Amino acid sequence: MNAVRSLRDALDRLTLYLPLLVMALLAMGSWWLLRAMPETWGSGAEKVQRKEPDYHLENFSTQVFDATGRLIRQIGGEKARHYPDTDELHIDAVRFYAVDASGVEVRATARQGIATGDGERVTLMGQVHVISPAHGLTPRMEFRGERLVAWTKAEKMRSTEPVEIWRGPDRFNAQDLDFDMKTGQYQLSGRVRGVLQPQSQ
Image (cartoon, rainbow, N blue to C red; front, side, top):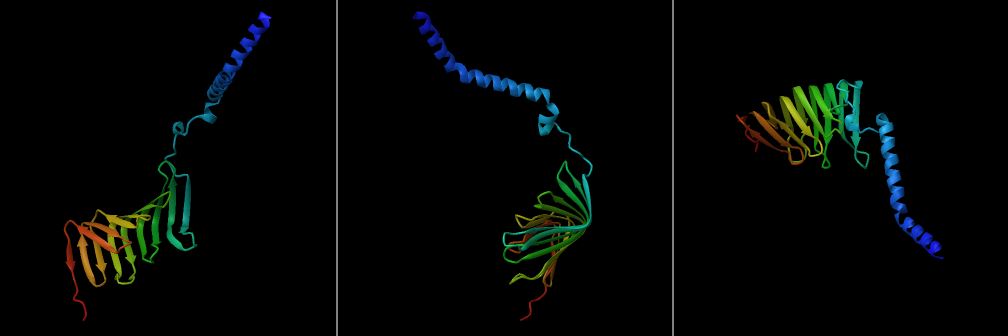
């Protein structure tokens, strides 16, 4: 009788520790599996990223649409190379277009451009020419320079190199530019020169 009770107590204690034993066995099995197949299960950080292009494009155009199907962003060019280590698209003879919800448009061209993989930042370099047509009370605006960075989601443009700006008939030169596409306002800094034309009555 005592032997049966002792056996029953031992089985009860065993059932209490059984889940822990099963978890320990599963953990050891997982560890062994990872050690046995490091190539398959190794972390992505251990993989060496390619520093040369993984694909090329010619005479291409990429477009982004909003939920209603309206075109809101487009990037194109003559040639492009994608670098997987930085997820950047390097573009020759780049063409850029963006329009916000209120209808303010921006069109730009440059000799070269670099676009991030998500298209949120576009850097234009070499003979940069940007036009924003007149919209509502905001007159036509035009920019020329050698380097300009556009943040498409924030709808802002920035240049830290000399730029030439036309706002309607008025003309400005500046060393730095901050342009808010949503409001049509821009800030000029550095050495700024301007020629303001008299307004017609």
